[in-house]
Image 1 (cartoon, rainbow, N blue to C red):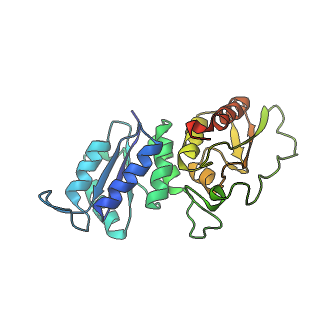
Image 2: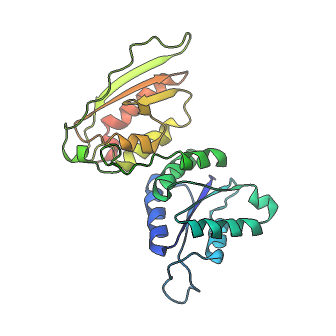
Length: 252
């Protein structure tokens, strides 16, 4: 099993949409939507429901814990009320994240997919990159992906010596797939690198962070440069190389 996620939103459609998005990158993680309010007899109304949040926690709890993500302030209040009524044993494994809903859900789902414990999944959600400046952060399909070869090039590898006794590895490849390093390939890399014992950077950002990988905005034809330091350094570089050369299983 893995840590489950609960998505609480005032809108039923928003909650279900975030679940659908995160599930694309974490197929083995249980994600439960708790959006809107109502008795189930008709369309959900805008708001949050104690009963829906409670049911979603029960659905997402597979034994390894649950992380809850919310949209607006009153959703936080509803989630906190539900937590107060949980059995103490169950409550110990549930975390309420203070994170952006979409970015946090994606980052948490990828972390959970890798089998991380609940507190690591919580940290991934709360540490997800958030920016309202598109020139700094262009998630999913970026302007750079739409114009291959345009934009800043990959940073050069560091010339500094590695720590004494540490294994190092480097590699560079050109992205062949049409959509470049968008959400799903970024999740593939972050998930595959999570458990490797190495510090890994991809074009200068943490290779284990799906949000930072997405922030690179690398389109088709752009260069992916990897540096890794640690016992699994070569395994990390080889993994990235295989995925890039295969185009992440997408059209090239």
